[in-house]
Image 1 (cartoon, rainbow, N blue to C red):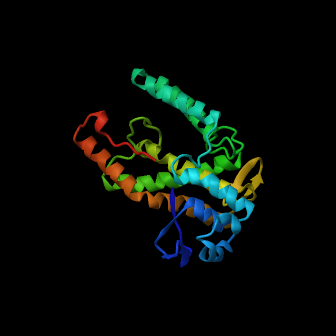
Image 2 (image 1 turned 60 degrees about the vertical axis):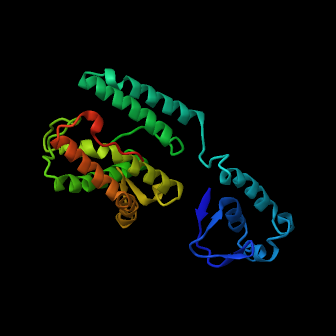
Image 3 (image 1 turned 30 degrees about the vertical axis):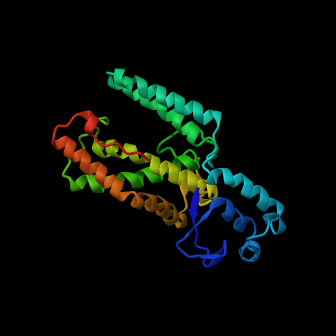
Length: 265
């Protein structure tokens, strides 16, 4: 695995690494554990690493060499996640046999429960409870999905669709059902952004106020939360635009279901 770095001019193998060059993860490990290594590498690069590496550096380098050689992965694998993936795959296999709307709704609910439980297993997940403000993570997802909804609506309007006539989401009073339909493939962007933000301590329970058993995001923190979600969506704006564009072409051309776009995250 090769990571881009911005460490300026560093001597490596007797040649300068320029600002746009790359360095292996196992070497970058040295700089993470000991910034002084930037100097030591320039002096002792041709010597045995044990002469100038501390124990944590040596262990970290060995651990990361497998990643550099594509023999390992930085992703944490656990049986709970693997079981969840198997359950979702099994549900996908049964999908072509579903011919009733209520049956389809039940299948989606089962898969969603499995997905959220596995994806947020380290975030004290208590179940998905939209708009109930029952816990910080659910409120955060509500915020992200609302931003995604408005983002999707702006693209769908460009192609002149009737926003209130959906496919999976049926007609409901004042509900823009088609937007609800087409935003579904992109919910994973919000899910991922929220998980990263909580892991990085950008999002935290301390940013919320508990009022009558409901969590409310503090006003001064709103911009920080909005920025995280908008940054992720803007980075994917062309993918979203092309998805809606292809959907429009398939819809207007009466294409088969197999020709409709699929978004892969």
